[in-house]
Image (cartoon, rainbow, N blue to C red; front, side, top):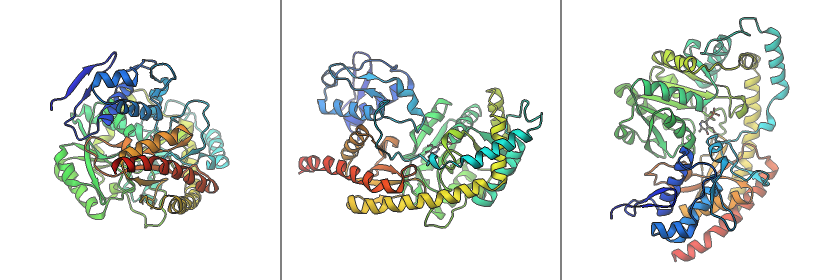
Length: 476
Ligand SMILES: Cc1ncc(COP(=O)(O)O)c(C=O)c1O
């Protein structure tokens, strides 16, 4: 059947019944994209569920569920007696941690998958480093500093990454950024200028990172994943010049790239001239497995290593780093310099001191113990309250993947949980077209006190229980 294309009052929506993606998801994806791109401005009114359903020739359930999901994600405001409206908060959603609940609404449990425990931020140790930085800063360090970042910080980061992550880190190849998203944005821009446009992303992968590179001129291309990680046949078929991967703990699935796939991925880069962008976002937190060194150490001229203090210290630190192949140092420094971006020198000096005194290592070691206990409490509670749902991705990181029987259950669970202040994310909100893996809810334990975890899981289990029966009855 040919695609239906109807003009609603103020938005253009294409519904194609021939696509394997459900009508509801097609509608939801297009509205989400339109809001994110600004095509639907904050405050715009959408048609009622009834009017839109009539217009598109779909059931009202389809439009209603799409609106509920977008409201749960924070894009739409559903109003009694009035048409839904695009929220002003919509753009804030690009920050991965922006809460999708209405301002002032009570958050019972924040189980979003990428949040660290900022209550454990080492305030005293950081304060000491800031004092040392201020007291010792030279007049040159208080002047205009280079766009690549302060040398002493790059030296400390190189030492840490070589020792702890097996990165081949020469301080001259390191660029200081505001974090991984910023590093990716710079790389995407530089690659676009160099004539490369197709950037492969694991399917699923963090949607914010894809938005960031799209904004910088790249086309994200989906690449399939399986239990060993990114599939190299799919990567070869994608015809991409670069590929973003998270080998140590893939987001959101938690899959670890197998030794054989690591080898094949490097081979892909070396034979095709492709560039691997290694997102090492939470590898510092691994629990019951041997450390897996960074991929970058195997082929420093073909892999960019991306690291950040966002998970290890706090998202608000806004300090990260990229370790670059020689040929990309000048283009990336140029991107920073031409964009007039120089990161605060005092923060850089403080982080250098913090690393130098071993505080970073001490903090990570302390957090590993705390997170492991929370992870164990979560796994126990899931076994008790959701014994039928397979749990994956728990050997590292700050979240578990709790599989659900269907995309409909996933959608209902996430919308309901978010509406009552139990903040979770769905796995498929990170999916690209062609995703055919399981539906799941992503349950983070980073910021949740150990004692609160059983109750949080019990609430989630109640929601899952309520979401399942009618659907099972319908299926029967
Ligand atoms: C998988 C993944 N990579 C990268 C980032 C971005 O990190 P940063 O805060 O350093 O930009 C996030 C943020 O949540 C993430 O979840």
